[in-house]
Amino acid sequence: MLITNLSQYRLVSVQGDDAEKFLQGQLTCDVSKLQNGESTITSHCNPMGKITALFRIIRIEEKQFHLLIEEDILTFAINQLKKYAVFSKVEFHFLDWQITGLVSENINENCNMISAQIKIFLEGKPQRYILINSTPINLNYNLEPVHWTILEIQNGIPQFSAQSLAEFIPQAVNLQQIEKAISFQKGCYIGQETIARAKYRGINKRAMLTFQADATTLNYTPSLGSEIEVKLQNGWRKTGYILSAVVFDKILWLQVIVNQDLQTETAFRLPKQHIGLKIYPLPYSLS
Image (cartoon, rainbow, N blue to C red; front, side, top):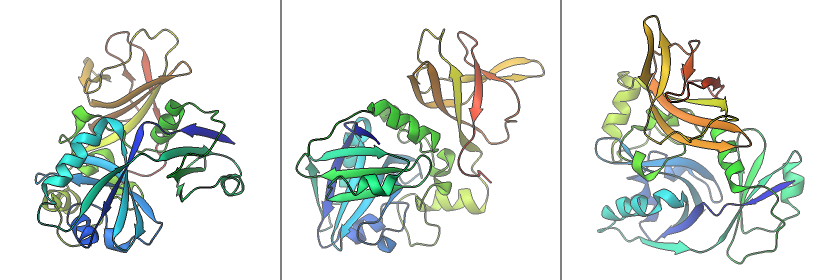
């Protein structure tokens, strides 16, 4: 059993008489269909349909939800939500709670050994739980938080930084394939027109791919927002947008937004050291 302190996340409570109605009109997921204790990855977009926040929403009860948000995008994400909450009976509260990640082959058995007020089972491999407690409990952490980030990358969950917000529509980072992140049947919400056109008219030309590389000789971590290179008949050319980059245990992991018509069987590399990049298979289809 592997346990890590998910200190890179913060928990925000959204509660009040209008909590469900407000979030339903803001987020890409169908908030009204979430049962108590159920969660999903979701996004908040601006009127142009560009992602201004990506987080996990957890329904606690009828009028209360928790948002699990990465620290790096927290301020921008909450400020964007609050802009639309002026005329709604809804309150935001930052919760200084303990957030723990659990990885195990016998996930249910080991999870039951640890007390938690909120337990969230995550789809994908390996099996994982997020455990949340208002009062910290003593745990023997034996997994680095960065390893959890890599597990998210391996499971095709986009990792956003503050500089990448308001740049991409949800389908450009594969959210249509992840949990219940986007509902195409619910009523109106911010950015819905663009997101619906991307689905029904095929206007989205981008997708997120995961790459890995041997980082033994790598002397830098690629900058977020920079490009990789693809080999064409007339040589190498720059392409894509690096959404996330993590080096751990001498392996480089990249999430790169590329054009969907890019031939994935071709060769890719880093621009500076010309280290080859290998596509890591996503756990879902992009079609």
